[in-house]
Image (cartoon, rainbow, N blue to C red; front, side):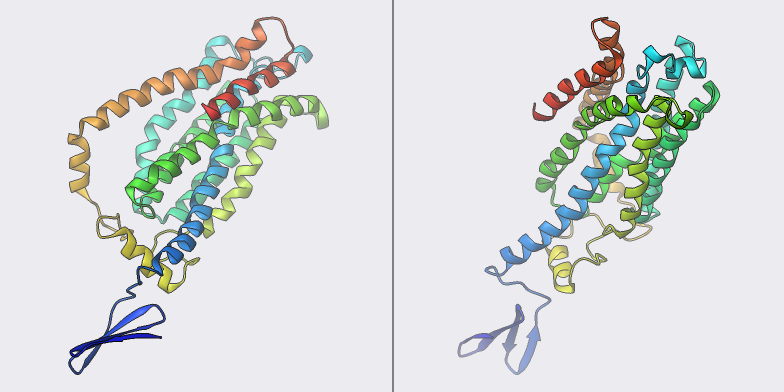
Length: 337
């Protein structure tokens, strides 16, 4: 306990709180953290938040991208054996193109609505639903028997995955200051760029399982790469929803975090809609320039990613297995640059 006195007042510090005397009255400030104590608490609190949000979401994002990009790996797996996905499902080039594009259509439809659902459900519960949904759907791709079946599961995968990325950014906004967000988003997004490399390596290994238990290699690919999402979905139930309700923080840490974020931070109160911020967003020209950039990025980046394994194989100088491995080089380089 520290104390400083003067002729008219004195201050005492008890358990990191400031007790001030004014005349005959004693006043306890609301969890006022001293400047020299603040850095220690801030470091501990931010480490916990980064582990739960950045760490967990980055790991899940790796498998989310795998579950959406493995369709390009499935296109060429075990073609030499006559057990390729197009042959077994009887897909024409046009039908194959539709099974690719239907994922993007459901993404476009459900991405806005999935994000709005976080205003109704808590982040932990909604993330559990999304991750479990695309995990089950990804595994279900292995059971498709024809064009209609594959169209259904691809649509549902897109519907579930659509809400994940924007929901992560929305959830992080409750915990970080605006200037702290870019670094966390960069780590989260960059790790996702390693997913096609991991998927290519898995496709190479799983290709040797062709015929095991009577299943073609592409069926094993969808089944095994969908299971991690199902396993990780359970951890989402323990995610901290909002600073004021976080179970992994102490009462003092919760109070400190809310004070640190300030009144401008979004709130987790149900029924609260900040339409003023929405109006500012619509009037901001940056919103439209970024939208154009993201559309171009999707057409170019995702288009190349989808077609590259087939392009490499059809160059004619390597096998389907080696084509999967050669795809790793590009995605590994993109992680660093």
